[in-house]
Length: 428
Figure 1: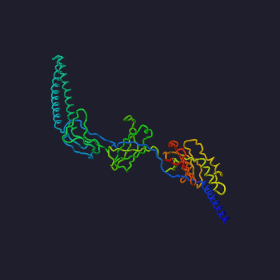
Figure 2: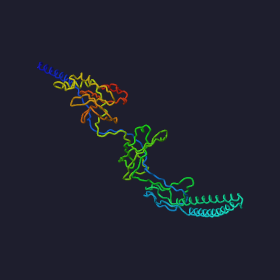
Figure 3: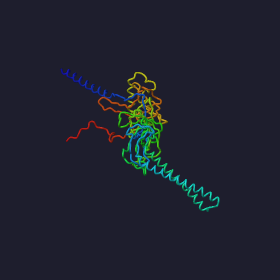
Figure 4: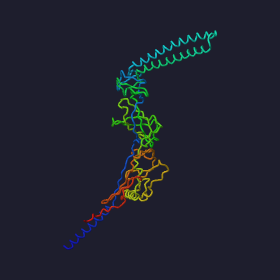
């Protein structure tokens, strides 16, 4: 009985020791995982933004050159008008009276010219016979020429009054639509010092333009013919297309901020865009479609050498036979050699490519970027799987992750301190 108890106790001790040994070996086994992304086709675009105002391409302000009372208005807001169409008419009564007065002055001047010419001809004949003095002839000649000048002046005044009478009728100078009517019937307009605006006419609202204010820091990236998309608050879910047609050189200063006016054509076949709307424009500086893209995170990824050596050791241990072609047979040696090569230009980069359980370093050439992705020119094919981050851990222990980190991102203070998971809270 005593021996039996000893045997049982020994067996329990052996089992306990074996259990702890098994646990220690099991806890020493590390597992590795990868965050990957596939190479796919997409679009890269770099843009700048600006705010502007929609305007009609041709806008004409129609005024009057004579003062008077508006007798009749023939159009209203949004009226479609043709070139030469009568828009409004001023009271012609005072203008007609002035015209008649100037006509009477012309008639009087003509009579005076006729009388002075007869006197001049008579004195000329007497002078040839030496019957009058030279001074008398000179006076007759002067009176005649003065009468002719007075007649010409009277005719000019009469013509001016006739033109002013024609100005009493306001005609449309272009085909278009009435945007604004600034007067009403019976209103008096005065054209003494400047021309008052009666109507504002837009030529064609199916072709509009956006006058965008581009910041001086971005104006160097704007070019004629550049594609632009813009939105308006009236239609928030709709994008309108246009292109740059003019970059004005005159700077605009507001609150010590310099901007430049960029004109964008804005086709408006449905006439849903209206003058004065605020447009939020996006200029496409660079744009490439249907190209292979690699995440920028993959280019920044650099695995920890110790973790990489451990991963290659685990792969080598699990493989029966030699490692695949291009892969070092020893994990530590492979990790030592798997360093990113020096690049000779900004377009040469390197990424880690995952093929089955193995990863390898691949040199690639990149092109345009939008900071989140790079254009792949060579070195990768569609469907290739690139590594974004690598993590390792063991049973019962905290996993360690090696991920792509931007050198420009600041780290949280104290992030490098070791955490004591066994620390106990202070006892009260």
